[in-house]
Structure formats: C-alpha cells, structure tokens
Length: 425
Ligand SMILES: Cc1cc2nc3c(=O)[nH]c(=O)nc-3n(C[C@H](O)[C@H](O)[C@H](O)COP(=O)(O)OP(=O)(O)OC[C@H]3O[C@@H](n4cnc5c(N)ncnc54)[C@H](O)[C@@H]3O)c2cc1C
Image (cartoon, rainbow, N blue to C red; front, side, top):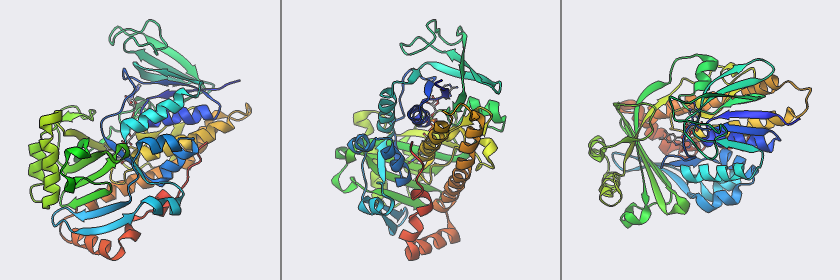
C-alpha cells in the first residue's frame, strides 16, 4: 500500500522534501500557508555538497540554466579594501568535490524544485492552507489544517478566509515540519523557547549588473569583513544580476517574522561610512538605483537557535523536522538552505526503506534524525562562530587577518562541509 507523507511548508526545504519523498515512492501532501509558491528576492549560495544532491535528483541542466558558477571567492578587508584571502571555485570545486559551487536567485531555485515536484505525479500541493496542529497516535499522524482563502489547488473545497476557516483533518503515515524558523510543528513537538534575536540585520538588494558602473560589476563571490559588519555579493541569474547582502549590528522595530522590512539606504550608508571607497561606491550605486526601480534595499532581522543537542530535536514518533524548523542558523556559512536540501535527501533515503510494510516508520524517522543532527549542529555552530570572526575588532581582527594571509585557501576551503555527499535518492 502506498504510504502518505504530510509536509508542512512549501519553502526550499518543504519542496525538496516533497521531491525526495515522492522519488522514494511515497504519496505526498504538502500544505503551504501562502497564496502562491514564491521566494523573497534574494540570492543563495550552494556549495558542492548541495549541488551534488540537486544533480542526483536530475536537476543538473535546470540548475545550469539559471544559476551562476563563480570562478572564485575573494575575502577583503572592508576598511582598507586589501585582499585577505582567495578560494578558487569554478573548475577546482568541480575537480575536488565532483560538483560545482553555484550562486542562484532563491526564486529560481524554488521554481526548479517546484517544477520537479509537479512532474512527479504523486504530490498534492495545497496553497492557502495553514498547518495548525497535529496528533500522533503511534499508528498514524493526523494534521489539522486551516484553509486560509480559496485557491484552485486547495483540497478543502469550502475553504474560506481566515477567521471563518474550518479546520480540516488529514491523515498520513508521517508528518514533516518544514515550516521554517517560527515552525508550529516544532512548537508542538518540542515546546522549547522561541528563536533568538541575534542583533544582526541583513540589508539585501538585487540588481542588473548593467545598472552598475563597469568597475562595480562582478562575477565572483566577494566577502568584505569589517568591524561589526560584513558585506557579501555574488552574481545570480546566469551572472546577469548581482545579489548584495550587508550585515550590520542593530535591532529592527516591528514584526520579527517578516523577511521583508522596508530599509533606509541612508542608515546603511551611515553604518558603512568608514569602509573602503569601492565598497562605499557599491552601496551608493545600489541606493541610487532606487530612483529607477523602487527602493532597492530590504531589511531582514536575523534570528537563530542554539546548535542542536541531539536527534530527539529532529524527530519524535511519526513527526520529523527539516530545514530552518529544525536548525535555523546565521547565514555566515551560506548553508541554511543547503542543510535543508541535505535533510531532504536523507529523509528520502529513510522513507525508501519504509516501503517494506514490516518496517516501523518511527524507527526510520529516528534514523533520519540520527544521521542528520550532528552535521546540522556543526554547521549551526560554525555559522555562529563565523559571525564573530567576520565582525571582529582589535586583536581578534588582527589574528584573523594574519591567519588568512598565512593559510588563505586552507582556511576558506571546508572539505568536511563541501565534500560530504548526502544520499540523493
Ligand atoms: C540573509 C540570508 C542569507 C542566506 N544565504 C544563504 C545561502 O547563501 N545559502 C544557504 O544555503 N542558505 C542561506 N540562507 C538560509 C536559508 O535562507 C534558509 O535556511 C532556508 O530558506 C530555509 O528554508 P526552509 O524551507 O527550511 O524554511 P522557509 O524558507 O522559512 O520556508 C518555510 C515555509 O513554510 C511556510 N509556513 C510557515 N508556517 C506554516 C504553517 N503553519 N502552515 C503552512 N505553511 C507554513 C512558509 O510560508 C514558508 O513557505 C540565508 C538566510 C538569510 C537570512
């Protein structure tokens, strides 16, 4: 008999899980509270550990059509502009890790996963449907969903606006909580504290390279490190657009759950006024772009959780967490979405074994959690530490710069991270 996986959340993690579970032979019902499948206008870096999973799912050509493949990553001092270190990517990543280092618009990554999911035939996608709670009886898991508004894809034919919405029950063999940083599934499963406010803010912008003066256009990943700030930029959309993210220390008023606060370019210019001319010029050029295409900067308050402490935080009974719901992290290793995709690959491997009716589904989810939690915890911890090193002042900054000069590529290359190949079923 075909087994049913229920998935809460249709972000990068939820779609990757739907793809992997359906490839493992499961029927999948995915519930997304938003009215449309979409992603914020920002970029994402994907290490070879992640692109190898996407290749394994048959998405190599789809990825090659929309991503950029930067030839190198350059680290620079944000104040002096001096080069601190370089990691060759391009061919070298391919040769060393067997898969490329890619940079991609989130919407493009999301769209290629969605297309692959839709081609599967055994996935039911439900928009406008908020996952409210679940019950795990030990023999099955029952999901309570709340229809938020009418949609052609919504399963409940009588879906009504929030407030008047009826609760709809759905039964399945497993529930995967891929509902992000503020996950309801996690709250019910672990009942732990809310995410931590990091005190870091991400200003993000994306613009056509042609809208920039030639000397500011770039096809590489550049990371500028400065006291209490850093800036990362890289190409997306086949290299035609530039994604720029500036992280500064500060607080934001308003909804912490929103990734899309309005941002004042003048505040960012103020925070970066002591940086190198080229960096200031880039920020100025992006800010000036406002006159043509609307306000270019959006603001993202960053939250995280402490590194995972055990497999019990990733699966209990017939319920498992995946992606930011399980291990939200600071973006300083550029691996949050990557770990969600790796989780999904591992989940698919676990679920494939459940097709034998004698095997206990809860045990397989437990295996999934055991195989994932330590790596996720390590990436969370390393991301947090990178934030301290990136924003260092005084002796720590001096030590960082000296080690980068002496060790350069050795420090920047991370075989334990990029070389681990998740099983892409
Ligand atoms: C500034 C910044 C830069 C980053 N850069 C990188 C990078 O370069 N590389 C990288 O790998 N990662 C990066 N990340 C991390 C990455 O963005 C996240 O880890 C990733 O998007 C998490 O995906 P997810 O699917 O787990 O969660 P989300 O993207 O949060 O998706 C959760 C989904 O669930 C839905 N949902 C929520 N609650 C419910 C509910 N109750 N019912 C139904 N649906 C629900 C939401 O609407 C959403 O669609 C970055 C993050 C930031 C902030």
